[in-house]
Image (cartoon, rainbow, N blue to C red; front, side, top):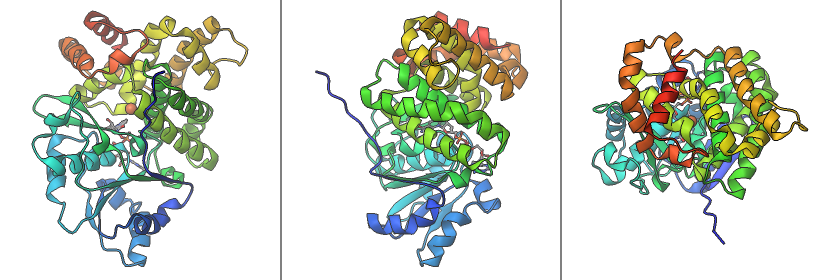
Length: 386
Ligand SMILES: NC(=O)c1ccc[n+]([C@@H]2O[C@H](COP(=O)([O-])OP(=O)(O)OC[C@H]3O[C@@H](n4cnc5c(N)ncnc54)[C@H](O)[C@@H]3O)[C@@H](O)[C@H]2O)c1
Ligand SMILES: [Fe+2]
C-alpha cells in the first residue's frame, strides 16, 4: 500500500480576533524577539497595529521590515535578509501571500546563502534560519499552511516555485477579521486563487484521502461564500468561511500539489505582472474544459460540492455546468481576458512559447489529469487571450 506523507504547520490558531493572541503563541513556542515582515499598506492603513499593539502591551520588542512588494522578487528577498539580526529568534509574516512568501524566502536564503534561483524546484529547500509564524490578511493564498514560496527571478522574468520544509510555517494565526478591509477586486482574485487550489488539489494525480478531505471542505466553503464576500465585504459569516476555506485549500494543495492552471499562471504573472489570483481566473475555465474528460467524475463532484451543479446531476451534466459556471463566475467577478487587461497581442504571442516552456519546467502540469505537451499549452494561451 502506498503511504501518505502529510505536512502542515505545528499549530494553527483559528478564529476572529486571534491576532491579539500572538504574544501568547510566541510564549508557548519559546520566542521573544520577532522580526515582522509585512507590506507598506499594512503600516499605512493601521492594520499592522492589530498585531503590534498587543505585542507592545506585553513588552515584546520587535523589528519591522515593511518594504515587501506584491508578487515578490529575489531582489526584495535579499533586502529582507539584510534586516535579520542575530537577536531575532523568529519571524512573523503579516499580510497577503506576498509578505508571507517573502518571509519564507528570507528565512531559506538566510540559512544557507547563495542565490534564490538555487532553491527552485526540483531542488528541495528544507532549511530555514528562523522559524516562521504566518498571519494572512487575505483569503487567500493558503501560504500560511504550505511548503511553497513563489519568488520572481528578475534576471530571467521567471516566477520560481520553491518548495520544501524551509518554507513551511511553524505556526499560523488565521483571523478572518483581518480581511474585512480587502477590496472587492482583491477579494475576487484571492478567492478564485483559493478555489483553484482546492479544485487542483482534488483533481491532482497526487491527491490522497487526506488532501481530498480538506479540498472537499474548502470547495464547499468557497463555492458558497465567494460571491457573497465579493458583493458584501462586511459579511462576517462569508469572510470567516472564505478564510477557513483558503487555509484548508492551502493544506490540501501543500500535500497534493497544484496542476495546470498554476503551472500556466506563474509565467503570465512573471512576464505581464498580472496578480496571481487574476491570472488563475483567466485560465480556470479554459483549463478545466481542456482537462474535464480526463477526470470527469472528480470534476463533476467538484461542481456539486461548490454549487455549480445540483446534487443529483449526472457526471456529464455536472461537468458541463462546472465549465459554464466558471465562465459566468468570471463575468460576475469582472475578470478580464489578458487582452482586456491591456496586454498587447504581439507581446502575448511572442511570449507564449517561452511561457509554455516555463510552465512545463515548473512540474505542475504533470499533476494535471490530462497532461499537456508544449503545443497544447501554447494553444491554451492562444485560446484565452481574448
Ligand atoms: N506560497 C504559496 O503557497 C502561494 C500560493 C498561492 C499564491 N502565492 C503567492 O502569493 C502572492 C499573492 O498574494 P495575495 O493574493 O494574498 O496578494 P498580495 O499579498 O500581493 O496583496 C495584494 C494587495 O492586497 C493588499 N491587502 C492585503 N491584505 C489586505 C487587507 N486585509 N485589506 C486591504 N488590503 C489588503 C496588499 O497590501 C496588496 O496591495 C503571489 O506572489 C503568489 O504567487 C503563494
Ligand atoms: Fe495559487
